Length: 134
Length: 125
Image 1: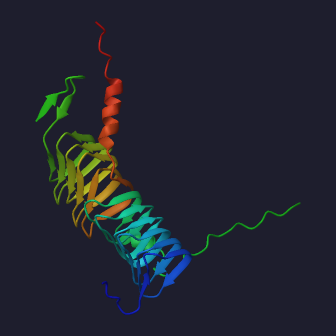
Image 2: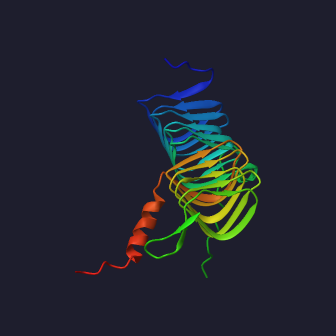
Image 3: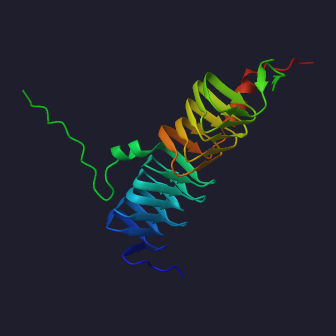
C-alpha cells in the first residue's frame, strides 16, 4: 500500500473534482480533476490519474494524463506512461522515452521568468473600458 | 554516402549526419540519424528530416523537424523548431525555445504520401 507523506493531499482513484484546487504543499492525483490545479510544492498525477485542467506548481510529475496547460516553477517530469496535451512552460523538463506530448514547449531558465509563480493565480487580463455611447 | 533516388534521380543521403561544429544549411535530410555533438550547431532554414532519429548535445535551430526515430535531447542541448517524432527523451537541463511538439507521430508517413502523389503514374499496357 502507498504510504501517505505528511501534509500530502491525495485525490483518490474514485474521486472526481470539478473546479479550482489549491494545495499549499503537495498533492497526488489518482482520480479525475477538471478545472485548475495550483500548488506551491509538488503535483503528482498517478498512472490512472486524469486532469482536464491547467496545472501550475513547483514540481509536476506526470504518470497519467493531463489535458491543459502545464506550468512549473522548478521542473516537469513526464514518465513513459505520461500523456500531455497542452502548452508546457518550465525551467527544467525531463521526458522519458514513451511519453506522449502535443503542444507548445518553452523550457529553460528564461521560460520560467515569464511563468506566474506556482500556487498563485495569474493576473486577470485587463478588460478594455466599455465604449461610451454618444 | 549518398545514392540516387530511383524515382527522381535526386541524391539521397543514407548515412548518419554527425555535426561537431557550426552548420548553416537550407535543409538536412538523411535516411540515417542526425547527431549533433556538444559543440555542434545546426541552423537549417527549411527543415530537418532524419529517418533513424536525432541526438542533440549541441544546438538545433530549424523551423520544422521530422524524425522517423527517437529524438534524444541531452542536458546541454538547445532546441528551437517544431518537432514531429515517434518518441522523445529529454534530459534535465535541455533548453527548448517556443516550439510545437507532436509526439508520438509518424511524420514520414506524410512524406511517403507526398512522394507517391509526385510519382508519375505507371504506363498502362
